[in-house]
Image (cartoon, rainbow over all chains, first blue to last red; front, top):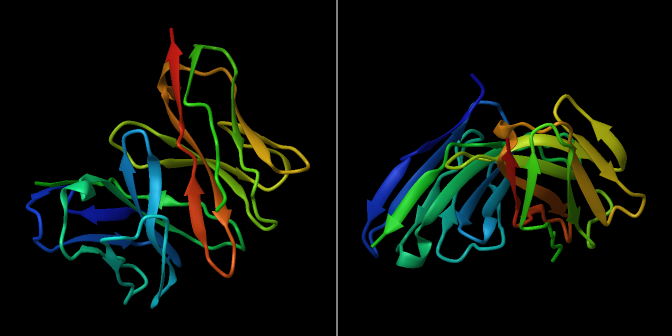
Length: 115
Length: 112
């Protein structure tokens, strides 16, 4: 089954404790992206990757890191989480059919709480 | 940066046609316009994508005027299960970046 998986689905952690949220897709998509979703703010892009070893900042990259060592995986790293990073996180992937086209497939989401 | 603007919420009744408009004044020449649907606690789901004029699939139609500064998602004969948040998305191609900008979403409530 074609899908994007994220782990963990739920995470409660404390300020400053490094964490990684994994994202994996099995559709051989080039484009992958991380979003956070907060009430009243919609979906905001954190980082994206056009392909292996190519990553770039989205609209809200502060406090996050990513890596793309393999095509299928795109982990999101919070080196020192803070309470303002409490949010619902979505990973997405997309084939780049052509310039400007992005039919994204989203993962189920990771609800992160930082206390 | 490109920005999209949508109505915050809309109400409708079952069986009616719903039109949701998105404004994207700074859309780039090569960008497509994509609409997504999101139910609570789920990831967004692709509905439809278009570049210009009109696109239709089995669930929706997308109307894009010639200047491409706005687009309208049309949902024919909505049902209760269409109650969701609808997002408009355009790409931002500037200096070789590929940021994607979601609108804040339109919360559609369908009543029986």
